[in-house]
Image 1 (cartoon, one colour):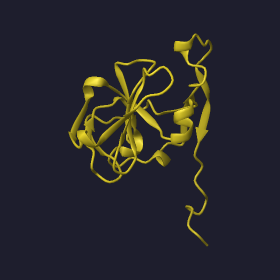
Image 2 (cartoon, rainbow, N blue to C red):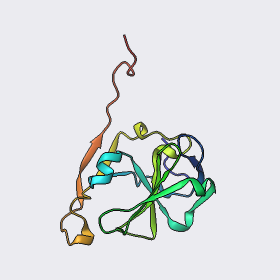
Image 3 (cartoon, helix red, strand yellow):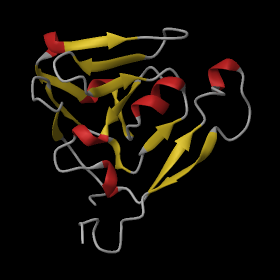
Length: 147
């Protein structure tokens, strides 16, 4: 897996939304979250500064979803439904980018992904490490291929 990615192309599943992004620390920021939306969405997100995301086409196809405090903004393709990115509640100067949208990257490339405690959010006065655990992907010995 590549450790750093200067600028990379990205897209939703159907290709209606295409963008490029420069990640804050390559793939080293990979995270999942336990908040109600992320729990259902199941994506691995990596970090980028707001100014380091450029929508190349399909901005009119992006739909915005907000919930709870309405601070975080979650965008997804209105055609295929894939979550592309979100503006973080914890730091609105950052975007979380769906790693699976990045060209050449799969969420299964990450052997371990830190899981943030999004249920007990620091903006709500929660204390502690902010980490709920670690998600591990262990590939099948046979590569997952049927017998």
